[in-house]
Length: 208
Image (tube, rainbow, N blue to C red; front, side):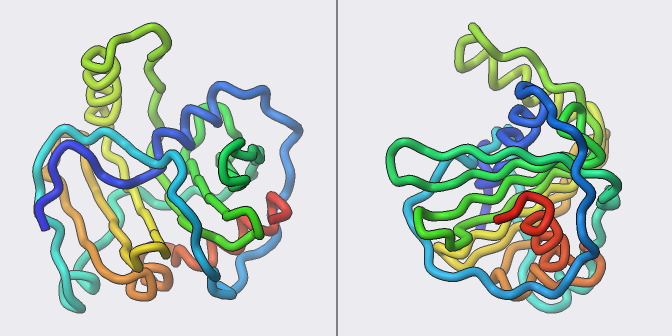
């Protein structure tokens, strides 16, 4: 599967939300626990991240074993915010570590109207988000692309609607590395954290 220009990751939305909303007092997170397993899914919410390049993610056990995140997950501190969509009643949770402003780790989780987790995404790596209000699509694309290219980042997405996961190392003047597979293959991959434990930590932090 070749991915060109668009990748279904909610990282930029998470980072923008962390930067644009007033930050509440920090809330301490509980220790990570094992994933309890998300349930049914609903229509997709906002989750696209512009990546202007083509690459072919690797598949299979060997590819997953060889993949290592370029950026470690900084889980210190933690602040979150919740919002609801007006259409299907989905809840979108954004969390930033150590804080929602200029996070080192930005996480977005989308739940359907009855509270089932639909998708999870995270972006690791510090970045100064560009000001995109009032820009044309082309200008916004270029600004986001330049920001993402400035430093090395690791991005991870789990989508239960299609049972697909994607992890990418990109930027910082180094080649893009990516793996794609099932949600189960990704969520407990040791060298990623694992994601399942971090997911549960965010649920406890945000009360969802």
